[in-house]
Amino acid sequence: MYKKDKIVIHCKSCLMTNQKPFSINETKNKSSNQNKSTLQFNVDGICSACHSIEAKKNIDWEFREKELWKICDLHRSKKGKYDCIVSGSGGKDSMFQAHILKYKFKMNPLTVTYSPILRTEVGTKNLTNWVNIGGFDNYTFSPNGKVLSVLTREAFRNILHPAQPFKIGIKTFAAKMAKLFRINLVFYGEHYSDYGSAPTISDAYYPLEWLTNENELDNIHIGGLQVKDIKKKYNFLRDQDFIPYMPLKKKDFNDLNLNILFLGWFIKWDPQEIYYYSTEKSGFILDDYKSDGSYGRYSSVDDKMEYLHFYCSYIKFGIGRCRLDASQEIRNGHITREEGINLCKKFEGEFPIRYAQDCFDFMRYSFREANEIIDRFRPNHLWEKKKNKWKRKQEIF
Ligand SMILES: [Zn+2]
Image 1 (cartoon, rainbow, N blue to C red):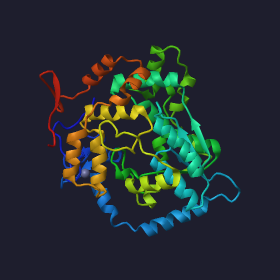
Image 2 (tube, helix red, strand yellow):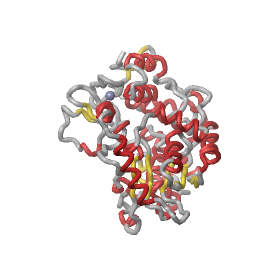
Image 3 (tube, rainbow, N blue to C red):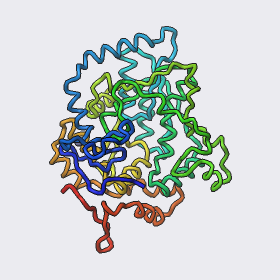
Image 4 (cartoon, rainbow, N blue to C red):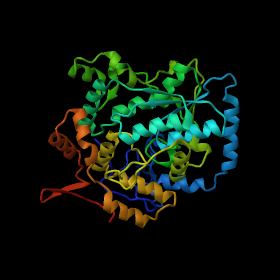
């Protein structure tokens, strides 16, 4: 399924590799569809995410902040209405966005939440703190769990991507809420160029055409299947069960001059600084334990399924949660590459034991069935079985 280079290339600056989805090796693949890829490897062997952070050192942040003031001045409501949308579930990023927009830029954001698949305890506390301590109005939407269970089950079995249906749903959610409430400004957080797992964007605006799909519902893919085949397989499903996963149509934007902006384009985005800010201003709390597969306690801790999702990425691409966390910290100058390698040696690829059973139960797989599915997705160039144990190939250390 994944047409990847069989030779793993590690970025010389961080720990990312050319196996990351959407990544291309620029030296080999000049004709590839560049606008659909992010993590490019330059001739110097350094990935595009590292280059992007390097380039940011020359950005005039004062100028960019003034630009943001201008945009806010244009949109700020003087009639006691919501004037922008911040979507999130009480993670440190959404807490930071909403707070700085409201209290520094004097906007009146409506916060909206697309429920995680399986909310963690710390995630629940943080959502409550966001509303109660940060001080925001919030609409929370929860998609039908019976339908989501089926879609997640298929996504796990067909593409080893259990979070994919959730990600499809959340992708259009803020824009749908904007349409519903007639609010024409939506803020996203970190700019895509910073983390290299989504397409490249070279300015502040998220392109609306990425949210649209003119296909009929039956022809849309979810979890590796077309909707018409999902409906055949699970005959209790009806068209209306797919409403949360429906893409927008071009015409949906006709009467709404919607702008989706990355706040991270205007404000310097340092995950550690944002963590401190959200703790102080909105009561963001850390998880009690470090995350399985990494060392951190503050990133993506609101959904049990995320833990399994990161593990699946480790199996398919050899890129685990620790590598993602460490690479980001290397780029931001908080740790050295050596330290990052040592962290990966210690934590990368840990089985997500804490919530695995809950995730498997939700998808209605036994522990054994789920592990058999996982093993089917180990590519030959990344994994070999020795003495009945899986060993990684082409390791960095
Ligand atoms: Zn890099």
